[in-house]
Image (cartoon, rainbow, N blue to C red; front, side, top):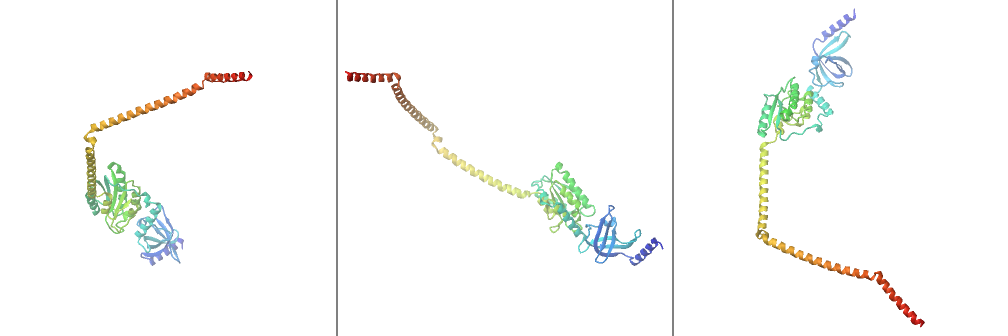
Length: 371
């Protein structure tokens, strides 16, 4: 018997024993993703291991990230890979054990993007307070666009609205949503789009799954225009909510966050206008009182009297200044005379005359003593 014949008999016996699909619970190990899209791994428990393969078509339906150590439930068929004579499990469907595939995929993607910093508050952009135009990414026929449009018209009718209609559910939804966000962001300068709203109504986790994809998350993160996420109801949280600059509980709430309330602003302007008018009236009253006080003053009633009084005061000052100058001049003349007298007393001629007088007196006294 040849090796091929032996393997063929083993395969035939195996297929007879396992004619239908099998369900296997085990821990993933030796996981590898081939460039072709096929998944290769082993399933093991405490006592045994079996190789497994999941071909590209089936693998594309797996929403979570397969990794070593993950416990899964595999559905498929048992067969022999004849070329190597190896027993294999050909997996058609794979789900995580103990939790839903979507829940696990959500948690895995959220943790990975959080590690990358896509949820960091430092990246959040502030909303424009008075937007000129709003871009909206949602279904053109759903309740979300009706709620958003009605709210924007009621609160801030001055803002223009640009809708990019997309599918919000299904396999192609994520690509359309990501493309629409990029389109509105690229056109923001030309069309003065200050805010983008990404929204849809409520639904199950599977219904909202397009907003939990990495493609949509990275498109929102890359946008230079502030993005508001308004997906589902208040209890619904999506990956888009964490990446967006602002999260709104519903599409209506997203529209309310995007624009101010024009009616409320009008009321505030009215209050401020009244305050301003009251302040102006008070200032006018103070000015009028000051004017009346001036009008009652002597200066206002007889300005010539004020001029006469000023002239009289000026004359008095001039007279006092002349008297002071005269006093200073006389005092200076007296000081000058004293200085001249002192200087004359010290003149050499006077000194010689006084010395000659003293010599004459001494000569006379000497002559008297000798005679």
